[in-house]
Amino acid sequence: MVRRGELTDAAWAVIAPLLPEAGVRSGRWRDHRQVIDGILWKLRTGAPWRDVPERYGPWKTCHERLRRWTADGTWDRILAAAQVHDDGQPVQWVVSVDSSIVRAHQHSAGARKKGIHRCRARRRAAGVGAQDGEAIGRSRGGLSTKIHLAVDGRGRPLSILLTEGQAGDNPQLLALLDHIAVNAPGPGAPRKRPDVLIADKGYAHDSTRRVLRRRGIRHVIPERSDQIARRAAKGSRGGRAPSFDKVLYRQRNVVERCFNRFKHWRDLATRYAKRAAIYHASLVLIAAIMWLP
Image (cartoon, rainbow, N blue to C red; front, side, top):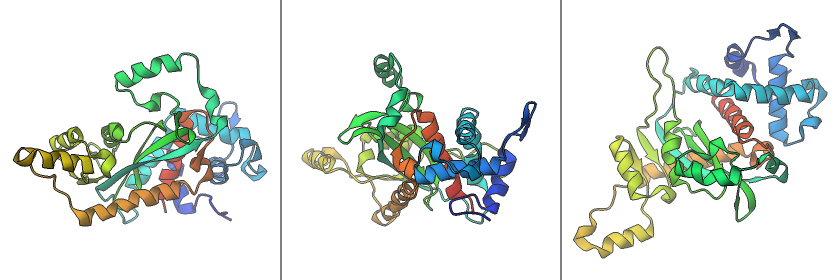
């Protein structure tokens, strides 16, 4: 009997072919479905790993499987397969983006290594995202991580990035779009470009609009009040206001609703994982669950 929060038979039918073989030279692995259900229990409750119920097997097995499949990209392959799974509701390419801050628990702050402060400025100068660090920073609420999210027109996750909590939204927009890659059935390159991009005023930068126009991406982003005032002060030299579709902008609520669904998983609403890669993989796993029946 499938318990609340565990994989359904339909979801397991999609996931099972993507997992490594269950047999190894030293013996058989514990049942993959049982272990994934244990990982989901942990993410849903936010409990320590040691409290994972015995019906899911040893807690160390669940933790090691999450870590191992993070390293080899298994969770990313599951999300990619879920996005193209034929459930009669294909991807809707009206893409909304936003970010949300989660509190990083003190237990997540133990992974910082010597020299990370010295190399942070070099990473930023080189344009390397915080995905390569541990994505823990300080904002007004203390230690925090910021989740940057792009969703389709139905509010299903397309790409996820992590930064420190105090990082701005706009610098991550292009990287977030570049991480979108939805494979169509059959041969061909994955699709990356949305029909329309919807974002709030945090992304209302002239340089961003120019890049989006250059990429041929129609965007619906409201102007900030200071931008309106600056353009008005220039008179006829200020140019025309960017086009803005109020009706289409109302669809941006889907990304807020997706964040709400993520934060129903208590282990995601508060970050306990020391490694950004593990926390990101947990988000990817739940993102795949959102796509599956």
